[in-house]
Amino acid sequence: MLDPLLLLALMGVGMLAGFVDAIAGGGGMIALPAIMATGISPVAALATNKMQSIIGTGMAGLTYWRRGFVDIKKLLPAVVLTFFGSMLGAFTVASIDVTFLTVAVPVALIAIALYFLFAPKLSDADRVARLPEHIFIPVMGFLIGFYDGIFGPGTGSFFSIGFVVLFGLGLTRATGHTKILNCTSNLAALVIFIPQGHVVWPFAIAMALGQIIGGYVGARTGIRFGATLIRPLVVVVSIAMAVKLLFWP
Image: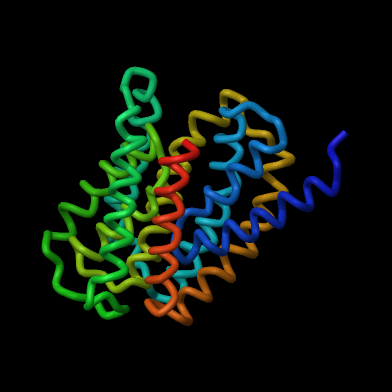
């Protein structure tokens, strides 16, 4: 029989993870260790984490869209390619040696943190894109989606830095676009995990309820405070993820 206090605690974890993830990404750093602490298998923990996080990410993305920070029609090709990229990554992960990513990804996350910390022009104002958006945002979606399918940590940070550096989006708009594509890549993984029966539904549902609240409040907070809050939180989350991957992989 499931302990109601455990489900309540997982709901609280989901709420906190959803709040942080809606602003700067990295909610999995909070949610996944809590799920694994319940004693379920690593695969079940990963699947359950994807299931609960997609609810918060979806709520955050919906909130950014409703507030006018995301143009879904323009982003649709990237959504499609992100989905298929993540699916391809999940299908091929068994035949790819990803051990080098345990070092490469933390280095990339530290570089992202340093960029967000020291770049003088980071704000909510849009700038001129360095690449044609209609071609290269879908390409970026496919590549980062593929990465998410085979490994995953830092996906939100990679999307955010791409939208800011390559396509000139202000931080709040970049965060909104990131939530949509991150939600898409998680959905692709669930297409594989759910039929295989890996999701622990009581845990996922409890955390999803918290994610709805945390994702909504986090998105509203990110929209209200914009770059003033998003910028330092991205720095903190990116460094924290890098340290975790390096010392507690």
